Length: 224
Image (cartoon, rainbow, N blue to C red; front, top):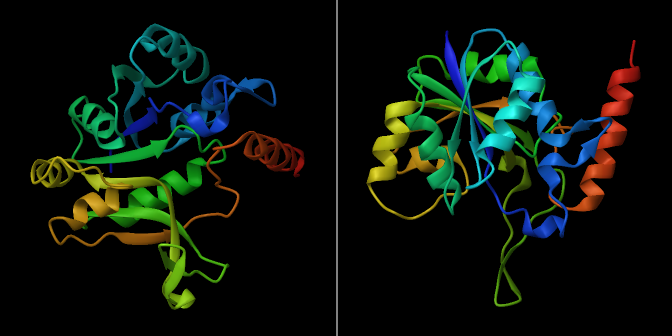
């Protein structure tokens, strides 16, 4: 099904340090360019909307033109919170379903985008996620208060594909933020499908993550 995409690139990246992670060099490309290229290559892509931090719109227009030259793209200005940036992106889209992706996840593949999009059809949405491998503890005030069953826990990733109007309706219920788009749809009692993603699909948060991403991408590029 034709699906627009929103790539989020408006965050402050405070945990990465003084450098800008979205334009950091990753195997000869800006980090953000890897996500742009993957979405451009995905089948069924409609319009690609890049959400930029205020003042960086022209910079990211040039970046998108260079690394997703065949895509129909728009650059819009994001907000202070994730939900503000997602809403800005969704309001620039026109398709019934929209794929939302963190620009700081450079190892996303066209195949994963296509699988999540296919899983969303006929549902409120679908997300990429992977089973948790660590034992998780619920902690309050420095004390363990819960021992969740690991077999039921998955770590959410992006892309996350949502019914555009359902997300907007859910956001209108409260001004509170949500950590991801499945949680936003959960306000309406809507349940998203889960597609197993990849442990390689990491989010670059700290400088070490950039080194790991470079090694993973180098191995992928070298594979026959």
